[in-house]
Length: 324
Ligand code: SAM
Ligand code: SF4
Image (tube, rainbow, N blue to C red; front, side):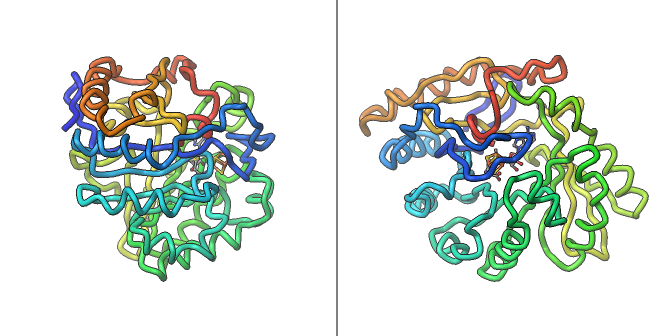
């Protein structure tokens, strides 16, 4: 198992397979994806070698992300290739949900078993305004389909935005009353290119926490190995609510994940100052030991926390470029 000098272990890899996205979320790609000339993303063989090395280092959970990962024509093949490895217990992906309804069955059959779907508003007009797409109902239908075909771990990501969707808690609560999904409010994070937006729309998740407690929701006790979300449950509701507060004290003490960008750079932290290129070590199966040694070595440099509270976003320009 990979363990860093702060005694954190890393069973979880977030693997970006493309920077491209078809949505234009205000906080991420407000003008939509613009070509950078850097669209030569890792191929299936390279991804396979990379995953084999991480599996050799004890990784058992992988999330495919991006950009919009499902945009890749070989998304299902990549997912299946990884899910078929017996060591992988959780094969997850994060999606804007735009093709979920049609393809949920195919993706479930490929071995994907956990899914995060972004849905920043349950109000169709607002959803359209935030994402640039009038597809709220389509995405919701996709979530129903995912549950129907058998996905057990379904999470809904909601980026909390002051004055935009901060009045929608009751709609989400109504939604989780009978729907067994976990809605997770994510505090808006500053990135390299969204400072003005961040200053205008960032809101602490305490805003949601206070309302949950007022409504009788209970904060669950955190266990070692839990991710960064603080979870709340209520006996009258099938689903749950999670809060992800990257600006809170101790957010990084439970960090359990590493990231790979779509061109094969290792990122020790979403907001780190370096990307460590690994692609040259993904060119043949014989490089596996060197690759594993390089990853182990790099982990020695993982910092105890990010420096977001000082406005330092590292080299990340937006989450689509690094992999959210
Ligand atoms: N395209 C997919 C999607 O939107 O679900 C996957 C990639 S996206 C970058 C992953 C997650 O990051 C989404 O839930 C998105 O809302 C979130 N995200 C993007 N930019 C963010 C920001 N600046 N602060 C907080 N969350 C952000
Ligand atoms: Fe695309 Fe996801 Fe970024 Fe929205 S948050 S623009 S869907 S990558």
